[in-house]
Length: 432
Image 1 (cartoon, one colour):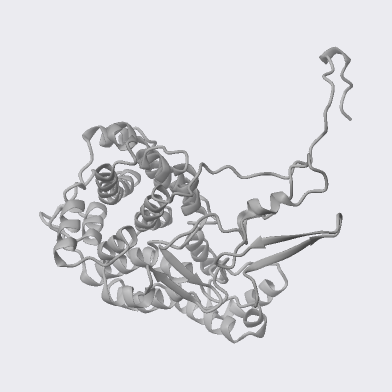
Image 2 (tube, rainbow, N blue to C red):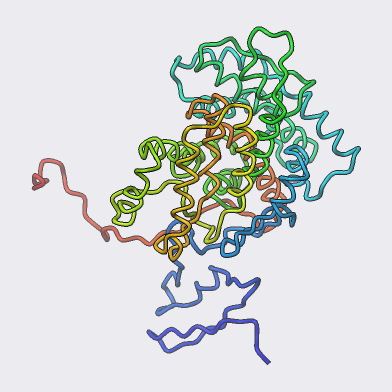
């Protein structure tokens, strides 16, 4: 009968070790027993960028990149995008189950009535330069919230956890809306608690002189669906940042600021902006074949194709592609859409891309939608952050409740100098 272990033979010593297998993983610390000498530190695994290292056990999000599957708490993303709304999905991510009617109503009420921020926050945001990047403003302001809510440091009090989750879910769109108005040189618009989560955010960005802002239903729905699609994505860079920082037990605002900082990077949250730049660079449908050939030669990179995790069509991309048409019926068709559709068609039929499994990802169409509703590219990642706050908070709560959690402290493979003697400055030779 087979054992649930892995036998490892060290050819340096001839010794064999039995490592326990749990959920198709071995504990990295079990490698420490593999030594040449008793005084050795022991074997470590080396995994740059954690490409094949599980840093935690999680029940939040499941991804099968080979099959193009994304599920929140077991629910397929396609079903949630079609039948649910963002606040219900946020509840699911954070609490583990879909809410019943009374739970949902209470959840929506609590978030809706925490949307206002202290007036000092508004004054703080006034201090940013007129051309400050909205992600930088969001990063700094969310971090600053920790000084307004010192009770948030009591992170193991369940009532405090619930309150800070509501605050972050509610105030992030407000801060994001204020950052948009700031860069546009417009007066801030305060929250309208009679609107939906997505509708209120649109109001805080786009309301002008009208007494009551009425969001267009198609655009409001599109923003809500985009929030659902971006709500969580397993242990990505920003979720890992949230967990790593949270492992030292700061308040959730500080951990969320770290996650926002990770998302700020162009390799994580800025890809949809790069797609628009690529489509504009191509310029017309007739130029697509030459850009395809340049991509094959390594002279040009097709942005929005391929994914670190997905080796099949990103399920979120198909959903966004459908809602894009609903938005364009309201805004008029984005002139870059025809280029995007033709580029996708050619790439999906080209053996070069098919063999490499380079399919459109979530960023390929989302930027077209954001651009069509009038958002500057600097705001794209801000919308990503609003949505991802739900996933970050779910990851934060899971980490706090995990008995195996310890402060994150990776090892390294040291390749520097050995023990060296200090030389006085007057005796040091000039470097060549």
